[in-house]
Amino acid sequence: MARDSSSVGAHLGSNERPIVELDGVVSGYTRWSGLGGAIGVVGALTVPRVLNLGFWIGALSIIVVITGVFMVVYYFAGRRLASLSRPPTETPYILVVLTDRRVLVLDRGLGSEDLKLAEDVPVRRISAVHHSRGGLLAPQQLGYSVEGDGERRYEFPRSQPVGRFVDSLR
Image (cartoon, rainbow, N blue to C red):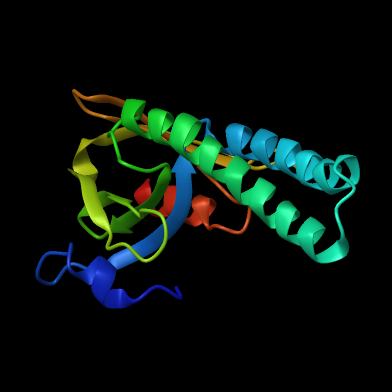
């Protein structure tokens, strides 16, 4: 993976090795992000036209509108979904790491923040693993149950090796 190995390595035990790392989001955030993106693009292209802005001011307004819509979706939908997810995280962006002993869920934060451990579960406590492949407009979904603590659900882009994660977990 392109990630700095020391960022994940700080959460690994001695002689523990990562098998699969998945960059994803909490369940439901993909839909909100996609909806916000569509609204942001339409709004960003409409504002310069309606206000009859010049080229440079119009280009700047497009950037401001798209960034503003992203921040609204992130703060009002993403952070709420993250706080309600299992395990709760501060942001909707997560890293799920399968090691030879545990499954780690790390909060990736927004940008260059350090990874924060949200949960570590021994592999023996995980059951009922579900994986649905992504479609044209749908992300891959991964779900698994933790013995005595309910189900976890996450979404991943089609480029992430979720199938390999599931195969390695079983």
